[in-house]
Length: 179
Image 1 (cartoon, rainbow, N blue to C red):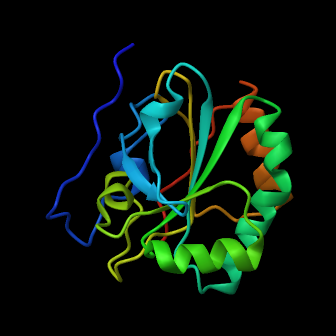
Image 2: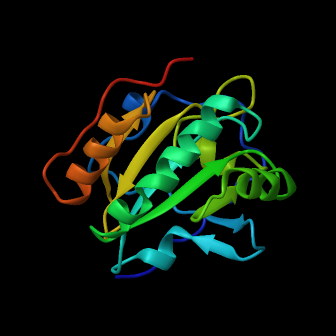
C-alpha cells in the first residue's frame, strides 16, 4: 500500500464541518506529518500496515480537563499497545507548551503540535475559537477510520470503547462535535 501523502494547507480556515458531515467510519483518515515534543516529525503513514492509531484531539495544554484526559490515556497506554494500537495526542498548542505539558503530566506517548490548525481542521474538530474540540479517532492499519468518538466524554468507558474498536468488536460513530 502506498504511504498517505501529508496534508499541509497553509490557509486552513478557522472553522470546520461537523464530524458526522465531514468524516465517517470507513473513510480514509486525513494524512498528516507533524512535529512531536522531541522534535521528530511523526506521520500517520509511519504506522501504515503495522499498527492501528488512536488519535485524540484536545483543546489546550493549559486545560485541567485536558490534562486529566492525557493522564487517563497515559494510564491506559499498555492496554492500547497490547492490542496493537499506537496512541497519539494532538492539539494546536506549540511544541514548547507541549513539552511543559508532557513533563508536568508524565506523558509517555506522542503529543503532536498542529500550530497551522490544518490537521485539526481536516478532521473536522476545529472550533471557531481556533482550537480543537475533544474527539478521538481510531485509524486501522490501512489508514481507514475504524471508529469516531466526537465530543468524547473521556473516562474508563471511553477507553473500553477504544479497546473494543482496536479489537474489531465495534465500529463507533456518534453525532457531530459540539460547537
